[in-house]
Structure formats: structure tokens, C-alpha cells
Length: 175
Image (cartoon, rainbow, N blue to C red; front, side, top):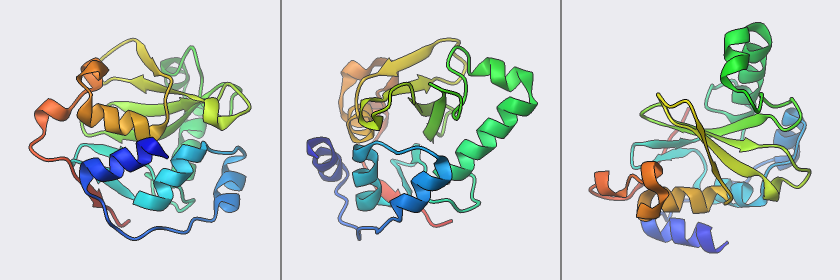
């Protein structure tokens, strides 16, 4: 909860809390989600940070930025197109065991995933594919910590965006 509080404070978010039917979301995905992401989603809901980072909604609407729709779409694409399946190697795409489950993206084409390789979703690593890069980056932290560090911590290296921003913000997005 500390990282979520830090994130809320960093962007000055005071919006309404969401009630999310997690049983329906996780049932549609066929897997549980990390607790820190669920706490994040209930506080922030749908939206983007600094006009740069999109965190996918925890719903199962047919919008492509819904986490369930995105997971189903990527799995279908990987099954139908060998080039797309190859792009996700060595991990593969969820629901493949240990496959990647996308939870967000950036405006420059970076993609943010969880690696679903352990039974406890709270232990999943964040895997990042930077646009135009061959390698994958791995972070052992929660979504709220990752987002906060992207905006506030120069130690994040190429993921750090704080030096490019005039103000830290969160904007709710309605689909």
C-alpha cells in the first residue's frame, strides 16, 4: 500500500474509488491478478499518467485497453501468426504457462507485462519491451511501485520519464 500512497501523492489524485467485480474479471482471464494492481485499479480506475503511460482497465468490456480483451486479443494473434508468437519469445503469451499478460503501454510504444510464471500473482515480475529494442527488461516490483519509479526515480534508466515532464498527473479515461 506504501507505493500506492506514494503514487497517489505524486500525481495529486483525489478521484472517486471504483468497485470492481474481481471474480468476473479474474474468471474471464482464468487467473488471479496481483493484489497491488487490484488496489491500484480501485483507487485510480481507468486512465493515463502524464499523457504518456496507459494502464489497462480491469474490466472485460470489448475495448482494446481492457485487460481481459487485450489478453484474449494477444493470445489469438500469437496463435494465428508465427511472427507475433516469435516476438514474445522466450516467454510466450498468456495463457501459455509463464506467458506474458499485458497490463499497460506507453505513448512511444513500450509494452508492460506481467510474467505469469509463479502461482502467486503477487510474485509476478514486470517485463517491459521497449519500442525498437530487442531485449526485455525485468523488474521485481508492483505496478504502483513501477509507475512511481518511472516518474520519480532516475535509477529506472531508460524507463525514467520524470525529466521529460513538466507536471506529474493522472487523467481518468472513459471508453
